[in-house]
Length: 237
Image (cartoon, rainbow, N blue to C red; front, side, top):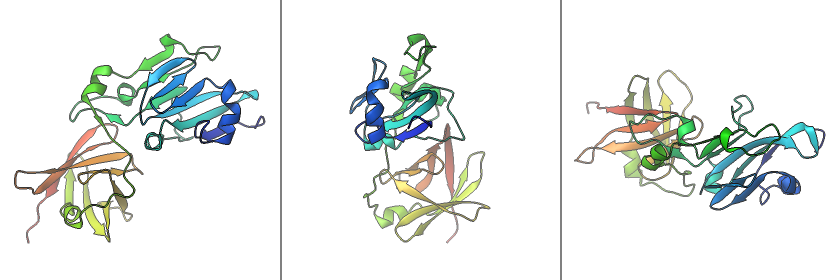
């Protein structure tokens, strides 16, 4: 443990190594908050990532990825090939209101750096934009046991044109709703958060289907580091 930098999944309650180091790490987790070096950030169903010197060897680091709940852990996105500009971040699935422009910095609970002594500093912490977060929407982890009425998912099948983007095809594979972009051979599953809202975790995409007054599916709105819209292309019988 002292010889290497460590990537730790889970807080002290979920990871034995994190628990062993917890007394010397400035991170405490609870169901409704995250505390970083004494600074409390209220956050339910949230994920935190923190980079900090390894308490057993200051020449190495620990990278902790933890959640205040299982649903919160869903929003963690550790990627060694895409390192964050921040030494800690807290996210809770908040996205901006439809057609409102906002960056991930504005929708997070907080992003921040430690000072030269690896202590929390208000001047190095960047809270999310309170107004944007209040007006925004909070997405949730797909429900693994949710069964969508086959008639409902069948109504989503068809071809869609993403505004200023490619066309995609939605189709059913058994009970699964699948998506394939035009020109690609592989398809990806849409995981339901509700009967109208779906996630594609591979791409970090969230979708919400739209219907007109008669109940006919007309398209969907989506979010992937920004809002977008798609129109369902009507075909002749």
